[in-house]
Length: 306
Image 1: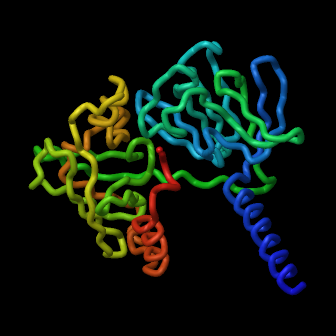
Image 2: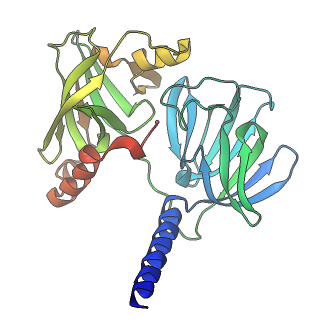
Image 3: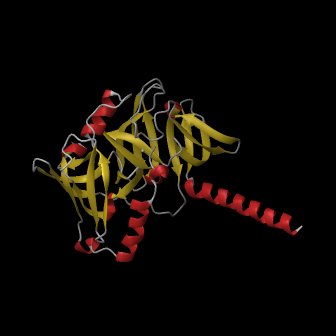
């Protein structure tokens, strides 16, 4: 009898843990309006199993967190491989870009959801599990908790110095659309949160044509992390012209002045990050340490597949 009670408690705790985990990873709610005008009330709303959206703005890949979005509208035909999408943010801002919606497309190897066809939004309705192809969507209205403040976007600013000594003052710096740098420590893939580092140095000894380049990242707290990043110029099997060009020539993207900026991993010597206020650079040591440990020691299997 006692053993049955113990197993019952274990099962109950496991059920509660699964339920809590699902709620923590998929709290978004949305009203989806399809191309026929039907409305679907969806809980645990995701795109390709994630809570960010991949779009291209001025030819540059960008990942947008759905928690920042109030609504998005698709402007194009159902048969279009790429559609123009207009995002209205919760802070009142608006941005337009292109989104891959066609099922026959071959997205970038880092694309949200990987290379599978049929890109879709999914969730749960009163009738059970729900999904809809992105090409069938007309508009999506995110339903965020009343009174909840939207998260602020962190605009990363940096000075990029190339192998040839050129300098670029870049704003809104991203690595393949993300604000984190994927790297390898041995065979383990990890990541560095770019908003936590002051400088990244790229070792030139390996040459600019090597498959991997050693790096040293120095955090604002003074902590250093070493590893290697992919810098191969060789075309990989199955890569499209677009994905090859992005991987080789658009590893880091951003804006210089009012113009788009992009640079390949093989061309960089150093990245120096900037902060607007001196007090921001003097971050709290304990807070930095906790954040850094999450970034550089966590396995990237829960990150991108971008």
